Length: 156
Image 1 (cartoon, rainbow, N blue to C red):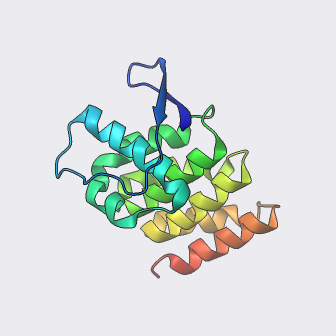
Image 2: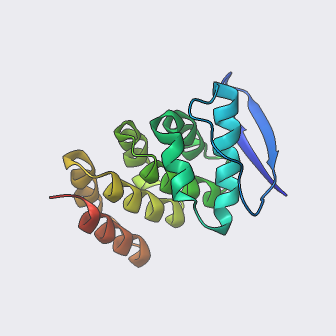
């Protein structure tokens, strides 16, 4: 069982325990806000066994605010924030780009790597510019590689 500490919508802290399962339940087409949050957290936990791209696509842009909140929560573990960044790249929501760009300077290498690739997947001029701007500043080789990978994913 994995415990994840996240900011609740009211600004307080909420501790949520989610269970990793072999196969997550089906996604409803229009989940309620609480259901959406629970589903996002469940998929983040399940993503430790590999991201379920189709499940993220089904959630779509509606999941972006919850994922952005997780990504911005500096108290959340780096692997959870990295999973949130990767998921943002799979939700096909361009509104995720500002949250992702702000995390290109995250203190955790793993988060910066995931953000770089997610920005590349989302694409667009703004994502490209952010990746290009960060590349000469980045000192860590694996993160530089992720930035370059992100740049190859961005549509010209």
